Image (tube, rainbow, N blue to C red; front, side, top):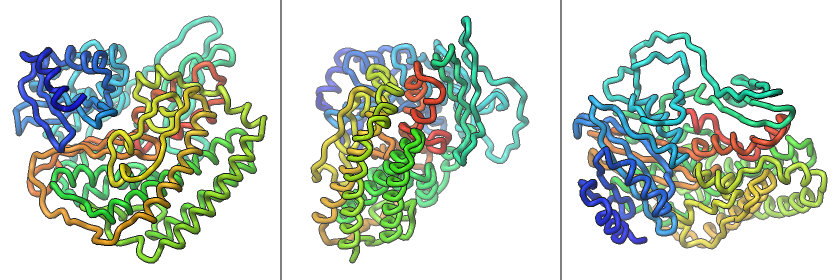
Amino acid sequence: MSMLELKSVLAKKFAECISNYTLKNSNELYIEVDSPATYDICSYIYQELGYPLISMFAADEKQLINSYAVYYVFADRQESLLLIVKTMVKPDEMEITSLSKIIPAADLYEREIKDLFGINPLGHPNPKRLVFHSNWPDGKYPLRKEFNLKQKLDFVQEKISFQKVEGKGVYEIPVGPVHAGIIEPGHFRFSVAGEPIINLEAQLFYVHKGLEKLCEGQSIEKCFYIAERISGDETFTNSLAYCQAIEKIAGITVPQRAQYTRVIFAELERLTSHLGDLGGICLDTGYGFATFQFRMMRGWAYNLADELCGMRFLRSVNKPGGIRKDFMVGKKSILLKYLQKIKKELEDTVDIIKSHSMFIDRVENTGILKPKIAADLNAVGPGGRASGQCNDVRKSFPYAVYDKLEFEIPKHYNGDVNCRMNTKIEECFTSISLMIQAIENMPEGKILEPVTKVEPYRFAFGMTEAPRGENIHWIMTGEHNSIYRYKIRTPSFCNWPALCHAVNGNIVPDFPLINKSFNLSYAGNDL
């Protein structure tokens, strides 16, 4: 459905409820909706039009419209359209009607909004705190503009509640938040009957950093460096999403050479991440040879990153308006040499592991995420694509020069560890192919169109396909080249609930393997 057709359909059905239509950045349609009608309109968009809810957030806009605003972001991935429903919440009301019963993906967003803004989702089936644990005092909402960052809060002592599963032979196994390795903290509460897991509840946000609050009032330059540090292994794609939003607001066109270079670095980050994940899957099955093969290849990818920019986490490569320097000058031959080396070793290693029957038996039918659940939760990236959700921002919302390059999106439907592994293997080969195409087709020319000034109270989305999946950043600028509101939704936020469903019916010793096949980010979730 085109933008005009969509607007016509909504106007015909909800004419009296929609007060304004605004088209931004060519593919973002904002509709302002009377609060009582929000539930009906969002239900219609989700159930009748079939648009998934891909993000939801609030903003304190009292100094602009004397109200809070809640944004519901739906996507038409076939037409590359974003439909954003905006509803106002008056400071003396602070309530919205929960969508969680009809749109399961709304669950965490509504709980997040309640914690950070104090807007209560009426009718939510489980309004338990999400971001803040039980030591956070009531009535303190940090994303309200009046919240004082320098204020020292008096923490309270309350017990964290978990869902209780009762029945004969049912017992609980608490795991974490501190783990045996060097991973970040997260608590997992297993309810088990005999050996099979019948429920898993994850308690995250132990390392909540308040990044969105830290960015308020800061310059666009400073916030770029914060964006790079959201999650260490998705540095480049987070910084790229940030840059995209700023570039749209500033109304500039990024030079072609910079666009091709961005593809190379984005795919190098994906390749590096997937090789680490594949090694982790093999490690958790006790397959030592394959583990060290993937680790070796990942080391080669890190060497390539060091050769290109001197930084394995790919920081300070991007810059709003393009890239910081021409990293590709004189590097074509060594880049192609590394890529061919990795490709050959990867082909050989994949042939070996796929002929290992005991290994395949271990990953097949383990940790199945059913397609219906994946769709309901908007599972993204390899975790979603392994369960039939064949969505990829590089195709559905093309950016950089992905629309000029040839590649296919993996399609798998069983949703088990094996499918997630195969998805990542195929994406490794795709990343290598895309980098080679970008090198061979890269034009000469400048690499930066400087962003000198952005108008206040403009807003835009930046969307990238991070290694873990669909990555969405929304920015509203403020006065004097500053940030008024920065909303970050990484793929891990969508996929943690999917992981909790995927482990059901498996035994507890399978959890590390299933967890590694998703390999979600704690830092990327606990913003």
